[in-house]
Length: 576
Image (tube, rainbow, N blue to C red; front, top):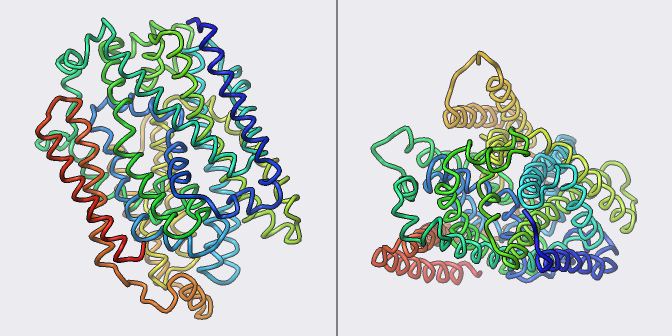
C-alpha cells in the first residue's frame, strides 16, 4: 500500500518528538542510577498510571485481541481479563507496601526480606533470568507484531522493520531513562487511543461493513459477540472462564499482571511521590487497561471476519508475507490498510508508539536489573553513578539486538502469551504470600522457579513432537503445572528454615511499622471486590452501549458508580 505525504509527515514528526524528549531529559536522568531508573521518586500518579497503560498496549496487543476474537469470540478475552483480580490485589494490598520499601528494583526485595547467600543468589539469578532472558522473549513478541505491521503497511522485510524502528526507541530509552520513558509514554498513549478509536469508527462505517448494526447482525460476527461463554458448553466454559478466574489469576506470574505486583509495575510504584500516588496510579491502570481500552480492538477484530473470513483470505491478500506469519493476529493490521490518508498516518504512528512504549519500558526495566541487581551487587559495588548509567545504556542496546533476532523464530502473538503463562505457572501464590508468611524463604522461590520452568519446557517440547508423550489440552496443562509447582514450593518451604529473625524483624518494621500485618484487611477486601466488580461492570457497560443494549448498559454503569464510591471509602479508611 502507498502512504501519502501527510502520512509520512505525521509519522516522522512523532519520531522526532520522541528523540527530542529523550535528549532533553538525558542530562538529569544520567546523573545516577536512581535518576535513570526511578526518576528521583517524584512522579505523580496520573503520569505513572498512563505509563503503565501505555506499556501494556504493545504493538502485539491489538493483534492478539483480534486473533482471540476470530478464534474464540469476544469472551475469549477472559484469558487476560481474569488478570484484573491480580491487579486489584496489588492496588489494595501491595502498592503501598512496595512504595514503603524504598528499594530501587523489585529484585532488591530479596535481600530485604530474606537472609544469607541463598537470598543473594536468588537476586542475582533473577536479575539475569527475568531482566535479560525472560525480558528478551517479551520484547521479541512485540518485535514480531512490528514485523507484521511493517510488512502489511509498508511492504518492508522483517530486517528493514527492525532496523528502522529499533534505533529510535533505543536512543530515547538509553539517554532519557525512566523519565524519558514516562513522558513519551504519555504522548504515545494519547496517540494510541485517538488512533484506535478513530480507526474503529471509520472501519465500521466502510461500505463493506455497513455500520455497527449491520456488523453485529451478520451471522458470522453475531456468533462471536457474546461477552460470556455458553455455560452449558464445558469445552468453552472451562478453558476460557473457569480456569482463568479460578486458577490462572492468582497462580501465574505474567508481565504487567504479577501477583503481588512486580516488574515494571513495581518500578513505577517505586518511582511515585508517595504511597497514595503509587496506589492511585495502579488503580487508574487497572481501570483503563481492562475497561476503557479493549473495545476498539474488539470491534475491528469482529469487522475483520467480514473482510477476511479465514486464514486463506489473509494469505491471498498478502502473498509476499512469510506463510508462517499469516495467522489470525494478522487481521488487525490488515484491516488498517483500508484507512484514508492522514488517518492512516495517525494510526500507524499509534502502533509505532505502542511498539516503542512497550520496548522502552522493558529496556529500562531490564537494564535496571542488570545494573542494580547484578553489576553493582556482584561485580562492582564501588561503581559510580555515571558508570552505572553507562552499563544500563550498553545493556539496553544488547537486549534490543537479541530481542530482534529472537522475533524471527516466533509466528503468532498468542504463542508468546501462552509460553509466558506456562513458564510462570504455579509461582503466583508465593509472590502473594511472601509479604505475610514468614516461613517462605529463598529456597521456596528457587524451587517454584525451577519446577515451573522444567514443566513448561517439558510441555513445550512435548507439543513439538510428532507423537506427543502426553496429549493434554493447554488449560489442563496449566492447571497441572500450577498444582505440581505449588505443592513443590510449599513442601520446600516447610522442609527448610525461614530467614533469620533479625532480617524478618527488620523487614516487618520497615514495611508494617508497629501495626499488625493484617490491619484494615476487612476494608481492603471490600475495596478489592468493589474494584473488580466496578471495572468489569464498566467493561460490560461499554460493550452493551455498543451493542445497543441500553437498559443493561445503564444498569451496569450504575453498579460501577456505586463500586467507585465504595473504593473511595475504602481508601479513606485505610489512609489512602
